[in-house]
Image (cartoon, rainbow, N blue to C red; front, side, top):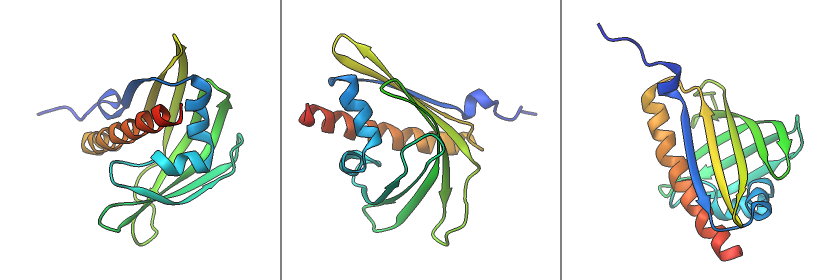
Length: 154
C-alpha cells in the first residue's frame, strides 16, 4: 500500500534569476498594463486584468489559451511589501463559472542580487501532484515570458 502524497509533494516552488532591477520586476506583477504583456503560459493572452492592488483588495484575470478557451483566476491580496514580497490567494473556475480548485496561497519574493532580481514563487497546497505538475509547467512558461519582457523593458 502506498502512502498518499505529502503536502511537500503538492507544493510548488520555482526560483528564477531575472536580468532586471527588483523595482521593475515588482512593477511587472503589480500593474495591469505590465501584466498583460507577460502573464500566462506560452501563447496565452490576458484580455481581462482587474486589480484592486492593496492588502485586502481583489484581482480577477482571464487567461485566454491559444485554442480560444478562457481560464479565470481570482483571489485576494493578503500582503504587499514593496518591492520585496506579494502574498495572494489563488482560485480558479471552470468554463461554467464554477470553482474548480481549492483555494491556495501564492507567495512571490523579489530579492536584489547584483543588479538583478531573484524571484521565488511558492504555491501551496495543491489537491494532487498532477495539479502541482501542471502549474509547474504553466508558471515556468509564465516566468520565461516575464524574463523576456523585463529584458526588453529594461
